[in-house]
Structures are given as structure tokens and as C-alpha cells.
Image (tube, rainbow, N blue to C red; front, side, top):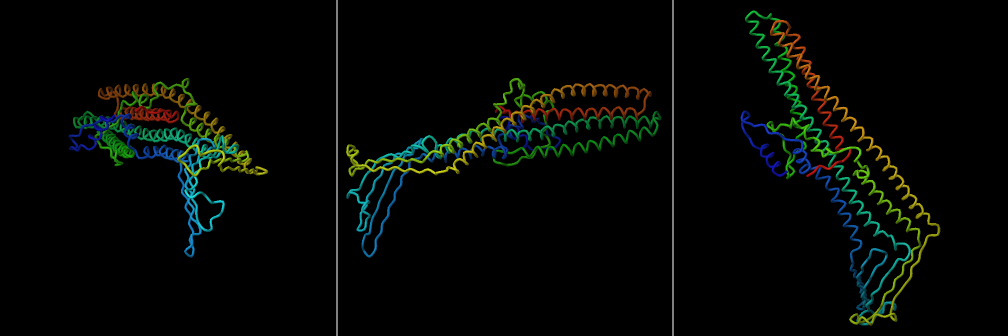
Length: 466
């Protein structure tokens, strides 16, 4: 891919005189590669993952060990009322268990008796446990699990966003290709009209053709010039629209140069570019669709919230036990004779808030389940419709090719009759106009075919190979 990028941008910035410019083809695959690597909106879509990774990091921070130091001093009229120092080190764990080490040193004239400690301070090491509410599920556990699901969901959503951008970019490329092909058609038939006008003019000067034929040939020539000018302006507009998707690595927009042309053989590699060459309905697993996977991750996150709300129905019963010692250097001084413990119990009598939260959590899960099932049906039907449409375009293309071929044969036959004097310039122009219309319709049909391929790529959210 790097060699294509270098070659392309060298061609863009390589300045020559207009007559010395060499046309360089930019394929759909190369174009989408530039968009995927450098377009700011694609980079913006990648921020979705960065945002979720930051939230995951934040959720993991709830399990970080913590050091706390609390120092409180009061002095009044040259008397030390109290000096209190309390330093602790806490280690939260996955379940509702927290380990804690503590050092406490207090002194002063008016110290609360319960705060009296040995002169060298008092050490403690213990544990606090939530044995009911908060043991199997708590806010820290729920936040971390949800953050992981949000990250997975963000990856699926990011792929959907990127494919949407690539879809819009491919539509611009196909419009550019269509207007380029239309301009080539008008250029070819302008040349035919010019040759016919010069031939009719010479025939008039030699007395073989009436003046009215010269006038009609001149009118046809002017119409062809007008149509070519309109096609040229359309090509410029689509080129500028295409340039909206071309950027350099330093977020600098690039304007498409005149010597860059689309791939007129794009029909041969469009399936490979969109990675849909082997796509078929039989192998299409709707459960692996990024949108469905995203909804599944969202449902898993809501289920975590439901479990948290269900856990809140339990009473709050917190236990704590701490071993005490004044000499932390000797482990055997931590024994059951010196301890500090406690029990804390609380429970609402009616649990109306908790029961309401649980019902809301269940309703959200039901809602996401309904959305999941309806989305599956919508995506499946859309993919099936696109497949049917592509099959129809195959038949339409075959019919259109036959029509273009037959109109070409009619025009050549009419031109032979005209030069033999058995036909009129009016009939030749009429045949030619129908051939032009059929060619333009064929180009338009090809554009619709390409856009339907892009729709399949978008609907199925297929990843483009790097």
C-alpha cells in the first residue's frame, strides 16, 4: 500500500505543462485505502475506541491500592489540645473484601480517651467484608465489567462508522467515474459530428449536397459541443466532491489533479475491493454482524446493571476485624487478644427504590432484546433485497449491452446509406442520438450497479482487507 500512496501523491504534486501531462489511473482500491488511512472523519471514528479504553482504565482505577494520611492538630493559648495522626494503606479486591493496614499516633491534653494509644503509636492490620449486599456484585465490579463491554461495543461501532465513511467515499468515486465516462462519450461523438460537418460542407461546395444538410450538420456539431461542455462541468464537480475524501497524513486536504483519471475497468475488481467476491446469503451469519454484536455487548452491560440492582435488594451487612499491636516488627504480636472489630447492618423496610431500579433494569433489557430481533430482520431483508437487485442489474446490463450494440449497427448502416445517397443526414443524426442515449443509460446503469455493490458492503459491514 505504501508504494501506491507514494506514487499517487508524487503524481498529484508533479507539475508539468498541460500538453506534457501523463494520465495516471487511480483505482477504487487505492482511493479507499487513502480514505481509510488519512481521512479525519475516520480518525475521529477511532476516537470511539480511545474513549472506551480511557473509561476502562478509569474503572480499573477503583481497584488501585490507596494510601491515606489524616493529620489533625489543635493548639490554643500555648496549650496542645491534641495531635492526631492516622495513616492507612488499603487494598480493594474483586469481591466485597478490602485489606487494610493502619498506623495511629495521638497525644494532647484534651485527647478523647478512646483515642489514647501507646507512646510509639498503634499498628493494625485487618480486613473488612461485605457479606450480603456488595459481596458478589458491587459498584466497582459492575463498572469494570461494563467498561470491558463498552470497549468491545465501541470496536463494533467503530467498524460501522468507518464502513459508512468508505461507503460515502465510494459513491463519490462512482459518480466521478460516471461523469468521466459520459465526457468520453461526448468527446467521441463530437469528433464524429465534426468529421460529418466537414464532409457535408465539402459535399455542398462540390454541389453534391444541399445547403440545408450543412446547416443541420452544423447544428448537430453545436449540440455536441454544448453536451460536452455540460459533461466537463459535471466532471469537475464530481472531482471536487471526490477531493473531499483525499487527505495527507498531516491532515492536509488534497485537490485531485486533472491528469488523475478513474479506473474504467472498475467492474472487474469492485467485488475484490469491497471484499464481497465470495459473499452469499447462505454463509451470511447475522449473529456476527457488527451491529448485532454491538447490541449484544450492550445487552451484556445492561445485564450487569440488572445483577447490581438485584444485589441491592439484600441487606447491607459489613464486617471488619483488625489485629492491633504496638510493635509491628514482630509478627507474633498480632494475636486475637488485641483487636478492633465491628458489624454494620442496614436495610430499608419496603425496598421500594431498589425494587423500582430492578424493574427499570429489566425493562431496558427487554427493550434491547426487541431492538436486537427487529434489527436482525431489517438487516437480513435488506441484504436479501440487495442480492436480488444485483441479480436484476446483471440482466439489465446484458439487455443494455445488446441495445447499445444494435444501435451502433443501425448507425453504421445508416451512415453507409447516407454516403451512398440513399439516406438523409436527419436519419443519421437520429440514429446517432439514440446511440448516445443508450450509451449514457448504460453508464448510468453501471453506476447504479456499483452503488448497489457499495450498499451490500455497507449493509453487511464487511471489513476491507488492509
